[in-house]
Amino acid sequence: MEQKLSYEQALVRLEQIIRAMESDKIPLEDSLRMYEEGVAIVRRLSAELDEAERKIKILQQNAQGEIVAVDFITNDAEE
Image (tube, rainbow, N blue to C red; front, side):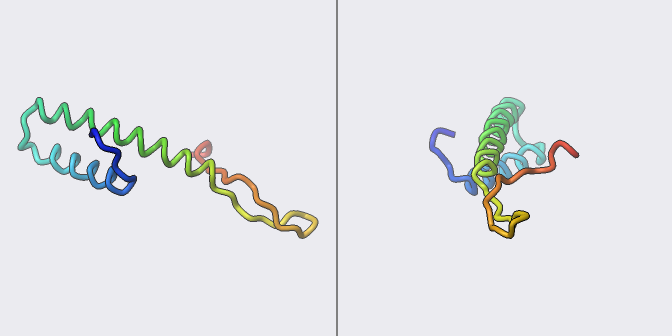
């Protein structure tokens, strides 16, 4: 994966890798290479999502009735 794929292109590539590996029609060596590529893609996409999440702000009304921007917080800790 030399070139920098967009998020959507990387997701499509990951889906292609998964389908190819599930087909059982590729040699072990190619399967291992695809697995490594897939892991790299998952890590990259996860990092991009984390970064996007840090940038998201939610508009909320505070006790004084003012609209304020607060950081987006996920409920990952509760899962």
